[in-house]
Amino acid sequence: MKNNKKWIYIVQVLVALSCLPFLMGQNKCGLDDTITQMIGQKFKPSQGQSKIYVTHLTFMDADTKTIMAQTEAAELINQAVVDGMQLAKNTNANLEINHPGHVIANTDANVNMLINIFWDVNLTKGEKIQKLISEMMDPNKVDAIVTGQYLEKQGDIINVRPFVVSKSKKSIVSKNHIFDTTEFMCTDPQNSSIKILCQGAHEKIRDSVKELLETL
Image 1 (tube, rainbow, N blue to C red):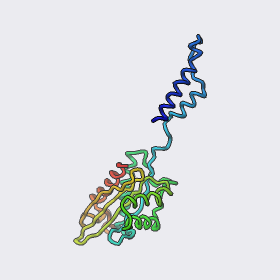
Image 2: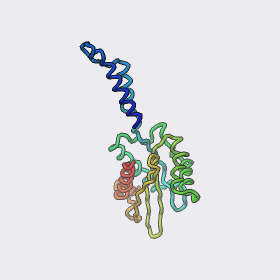
Image 3: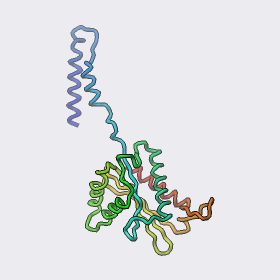
Image 4: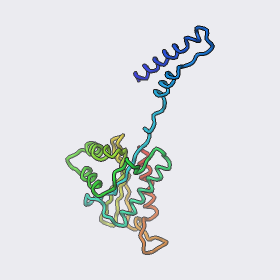
């Protein structure tokens, strides 16, 4: 704030000096081109600072504390997450999804790195977030990670919890969904040999990801 006040004062002085010829009887008061350029550079809107770079990593299995096995369910959950990210981008042009130069590759090694930090019992939640930022997000120039947990419980219950790690807010926000197996996996109406996420399950996961990204 103090720096802005100094600049305002400097601009006022420069304007006053530039208008001396007018006060001396000349017919115009004009700013020197150099002065105009200086003012423009100081006060023009910042470029490129509003982009939010988001990357996506495969869900983790909350039971085994490992990367979610590459099953039909994993692929379908990932697709619902991708759809949610796209919906969020459609409503916020500042979001950049898996943008070149601003992405954490969705590899087993990177997901396992996240898992090792996330489940480290020796770290507080704040320490985990800071470690995710310093070891994964900063090196890859990423502002947010979209991932989540998957858990199959006894009694044919499935728990899906997408979450977003935010660098700027140093936070993890999540949404929890509980499904029974009959409302989670359905048969593709176009091909009875193919399993898909039931429409309600797909929409809940998709919309949750969109809403979580809207908190950034």
